[in-house]
Length: 413
Image: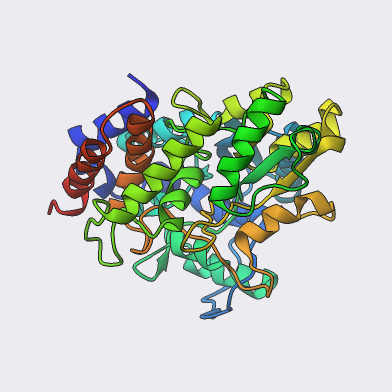
């Protein structure tokens, strides 16, 4: 049983899991206020429109001697963890308290967060992902005042971050950052295949996949499995770019459509041309494949390029990055780094269009984030649909199964 299966089993076994009251240990130790003060150091707000910035008081001050346990996923770039540890020490020294940093894998973070909530105990501050505040609403403190203070200091919040963190008008999490996924690709292999740039359309990607297979043997490769970041940011945009979606804005399941069949047809043609879609890959696997010189391109966060540039120094000069190609309905990105390195511009373009307007969507789009959209996301329903078809399952049968699974979430009371 995978960690994601374990998480779903927790959902099914205990449907009231996310309805318990606030953790009593936070109140008795006084760590809740320390936790939100810590956010003042780590939060990053970006873009969008500033609204409702009224605050109800001064920023909270941690109690002297408090012990604050902060948990987040291990960064794919070691310097990221080093910086957070440095900030934790700086905060500890400034406020005469102890900040304990816990780094765990992102897959462990999924299962352990659910276990912490179920047990009513655990870290004081958790770096949550996607729309977890909708799953753990009553386990999250109201941090509206603190977010409004940050808005005044740092500016407005990107609308995707805002949608993830605000539940029924109340901030249940402090917006932190956006991890944008773009395509990292080998310019030398593409040149060998007669390609001067990364494909700008999905149809062009099929052509590129065939040329790369013939000329280099190094495929365009991506996960079609239960990879927490890379699978979701690949297959939901593929679906959307072909005019399909899991559900409409009201939560009605719409995946059984002609447009979904078009998205599946693209995936089958890309695979036949030479693209490789791995059902077994988790988020670290495409990083490893790229650094091991086994593939020519993959969809990932900026960590592949940054690690090559700063640590490996093998393929940094022949690595570039590109935003997701367009489908018949345009370019769609899903937001899960900004820097002066021009090769990182693609990651900026995942979250902002050329005019500076914030862009990007979330699991369950066009419906707003909710507990049900989070539960659907946790089951990787769209990725499973593509994986089954690419493994030989009849497309209509795979779509029907996806529809049934989505209806089991969206249409139950």
